[in-house]
Structures are given as structure tokens and as C-alpha cells.
Length: 333
Image 1 (cartoon, helix red, strand yellow):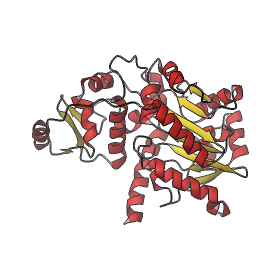
Image 2 (cartoon, rainbow, N blue to C red):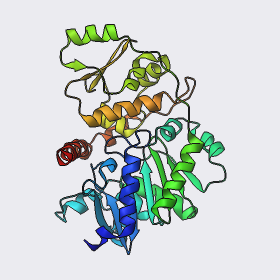
Image 3 (cartoon, rainbow, N blue to C red):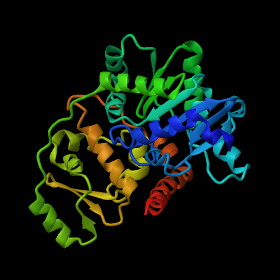
Image 4 (cartoon, rainbow, N blue to C red):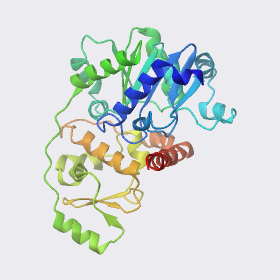
């Protein structure tokens, strides 16, 4: 446990908590950060919230060489880690962090980045805005081993790369220390920033009538969520399909599975059973969609891709995210 008092881990915790508190970068237990120290990769545990860094133990040590060997041999991280019997499981993206040669890595689900990353012309649009930076576009592949191998392939061709835009997924930035990685993140965010559309306000009278008729439903925590119903571009965008994995995992792929209900053009109501993670993911979806042009040609996840997303491991991850939220509230209380 000596590594836990390393000053760079303290900095990692501080930066992680700051990033995790920004809903435009991180929603619920999404995103992960890491630092490599003396052959050990310290990375966020699966299901833990970056916002809770410093409040609870959220980082797990993993041998860099061993993890890279798993990638080469095609060993599934989940099965590898289960064999160790340890309490905390590393993030599904641990393999990706391991193959990146830079010491500090930040992976976030930036709503600005995702709004570009779901467009078929996203790579070209990002190229205009990220000109002069050492960056690459990574077409969508599933998280875990497939993404790690794709990233390794990209970095083998251009090892100087410090920024990776992940199609239909998010953003990865790297640096020789945590401060450098955070500075790179801020630079990319500034360049990819999109002004969200102003959505019409919700019709609260109709929403209250709906809630009165269906007592199991309530208004969402965040006002921005109503734009999913009141904004015509948002409604059309959502009808097209699923844009990114967390949307499917936490919000479902059809109305019956969803923890929310779009009430015509009036607004959104959510199930009383909707948890904090679902509420945050719902707000994140609204923020993404309000940054997508109505005439954008979008690349939705295919049925085959969704099948690979909605696995038993994904449901376990969803449970870990919510349990982590509950544990953090208990610890604070």
C-alpha cells in the first residue's frame, strides 16, 4: 500500500474528483483515470465514480507488463481478475490504459466529444478543430480487449499521439503526468466545444396530469432532461437509434426498458425507481443531443454492436455503479 501515499496518486485523486464533478465530462460511474508508477498501473476500479476519489478507495494496482501480456495473448480481463480473488475489479478499459505508453491517462465521456463522435463526418470535423495536436480518430470498437488492441495499433503507427477521439464513445488524453493530461483535456474541450440549442420549456401542467394518472412516475432531477421531448431535433435524433454504449446500458434500447418516459412534446417523467446513475446518464444524453445539428448524418450503434454491449458483464457493471453511489452517500453521512 506504499503506492497509495505516492504524491502522484494524491494528484490523480484530486484531478479525478474534479473531473468526476463535471457532468459535461463524466456521468455517474463512467470515465476512468490512471497513472503508471514503477511498473504498476493505478486505475479506477470498475463501477466506482471519479467524483468519489479522495472520499473512498477507488483505484486498483495492476502490473503494466502483465496487462500488456494479456492484450497480446487475448486474455479477457474480467476472467483474469476473477482468478485473483481481489475485492475491487479494475475498469473494463484497463487494457487500453496499459497499452498507452504515456504515464497519465484520462478517459472521459465528454458530451462535446460524443456529439462529434456519433457523426459520420465526425473525423473530418474533429480534424478541423484539433489541427496541430497529436491526435487520432479511433472508429468504434467494443470496450475492453478490442478497444485496447485498436488503440495499440494506432499508437504503433504514431507513438507521439496524446489525444484519441473514440467513435461513438468518448475521449482519451495522455500526458507524462496528471497535470499535463488534464491540460490536454482542457485544450481539446475548448476546441471541440459546441453551444447547445435552447430547447422549449416543458409543459408542466400536462406532466403533472400524467404523473397524477401514473403515480409511479416523477419529474426528473435535472431540468435539461426535458429537452429530449420539447426539442424537435432531439426527438428525431432519439428515434434513429442508440448513439453510444452507456445510453444502452443505463437507459435501455426501447421504451419498455427505459427508466424514463417522453410525454409527447411536453417533457420527460422518470420512474420513481430510477437511481442516481440513470438520472445522470439521462442528463448526459440530453446534453449530447442538444449539441447535434438537425441535419447531421449520424452513425448509430448496429444491432450486433448493441448485442456486444448488453452483456451480463454490462449489467454487473451497472449494478456496481449504483452500489458505489449508495456506499458513497453512506460514507458521507
